[in-house]
Image 1 (cartoon, rainbow, N blue to C red):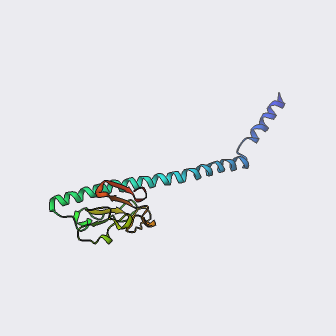
Image 2 (tube, rainbow, N blue to C red):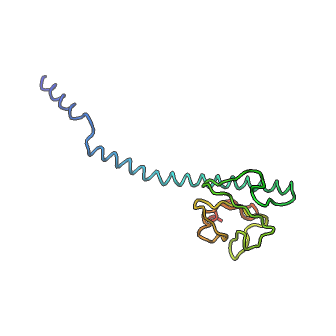
Length: 159
């Protein structure tokens, strides 16, 4: 009986903590899970920001339409709507340009310099904060735009 009690004590003494190998395995598993989860979470955040920009562009377009009905003209800039400085989800100001009074070369275009809107351009420069007038430009691929006079609102890359 004494032998059994002595053996039990040694067994308890050996199992008081994790071994170095066990700890390293746990750390490796956690690092692997974090490596998998981080890009998924980042992608999710990007999709949420794009959705928010699309909603805000719809709201701004509606406000511009109300302004047109009330004043009989398009606002000169977004500040004229009285909404204050509106920033996109990436912290950049929304871009607005009425078609009337601006040369076709100043407007957003798709292929062969064809303007994408007949009333006004309204867009976010997207995640990179850079944009160029043609949709085919690399800097424009992540822009969130209003095109076809409001029939399309979304990423340039999906247009």
